[in-house]
Length: 324
Image (tube, rainbow, N blue to C red; front, top):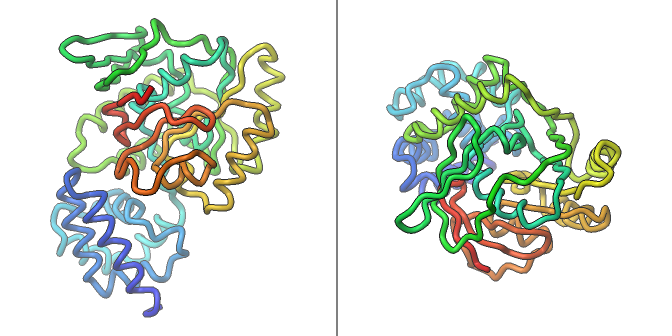
């Protein structure tokens, strides 16, 4: 247990200094405190490696009622309620479902022949499947371009982006997730809200609105794993809409696969003869088989179509810069 503790401390320190800094002062302070707290490190060391990630601990603490804005109080809470924290972290996953990423994905989808048959891998509660439920509000220089007439507005700054005239026609859609979530379930909604960082109040409001809209007409999300479940899921879509263009869509999902599974994921999409649209970090994108230079696009997500990089984006969909 002690052998793993330094690695876990480094994980939390890197998260604080690279991911949280500049985006969440609350989580930066708390994760730096975790890195120096022997009791919390011992607790984390009892978990499988895949269950030690900072977002999972932070979400669990918030779900259980800890004051994450006060690091000493939060660490004392974690020590006192260690069994409960451990139980939540084992039972839950970091299934952040950010509908604003649809604003970044939409221009890539619009490049494909309509109608589309979309398979979203890592769909969570399916909030990135009903593109027609949203209104896309793009800030383009000193003007605003609105696309669609959905009930939830998704703002995005667009730089040199070839915006579509309308939301593409979707003939069939399906979500795939290791643990599908129900948008209408109050416990699911509570957990998803706990995964949004405290300072991101706009994201929390958007999540609540999207959950309400999607719960009224939820897309189908089935249980399955990537890449092994891809062939069966694509076959379902092809039976449902044989004339549609099949496309696999994924955002902030590939990072949870090991390098071998990432390469297999990319290869499987090619073998199935389907398009693939991804919104992932540079390293996971590279592992899919896309040519990305070392050190390029630090901290940004890459929007890719098949094996080409179309642009780079803010991880939560706030901005898209087109590369052409």
